[in-house]
Image 1: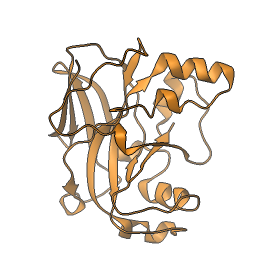
Image 2: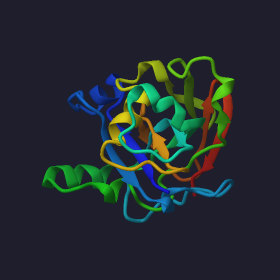
Image 3: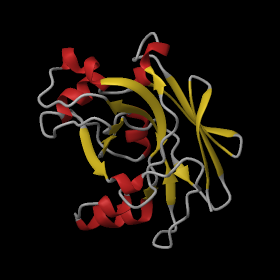
Image 4: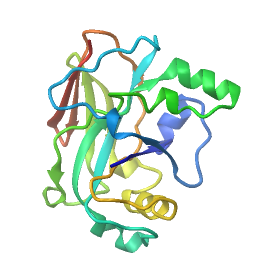
Length: 203
């Protein structure tokens, strides 16, 4: 199982980090060890002093596929959730400045908690699903899948031209504006259409 993460898929988020807008999906990978088992906390790592949250709409792949045409992409998923892409921003900036790969800042253990999954039949339009993140009861991020630069089906078609998608693979589809730092003892709650699917405590 692999976690495929899409970068810069919301205009406002790209702008807040002063990144150029992509003309095609940008993706990177996280390993299975980036997941957090339900109910367990996120332990702030000692290799960073600037961990940021990024809430994302998550799709779980249900069918093996490669070179998937966009018009058939909807057959490759049945469930949605929300997840948090934890990012060691200080390590990421250091890698960018040196022109180095920055997996060290994204793919570390427990960097991709994911919530409960919901069947797609509960949603009338995949391109109009709200999601959000609260920290200590305060809303810090709000997004809607209709705001994505590249749709879920476009992402699946594009990524599958490079990587074989396998059953159980997760796709983090990008984060809206509002990312920021976390600190120990924070409580993070992520929602899909006002339904809380994920809760993570920072220790």
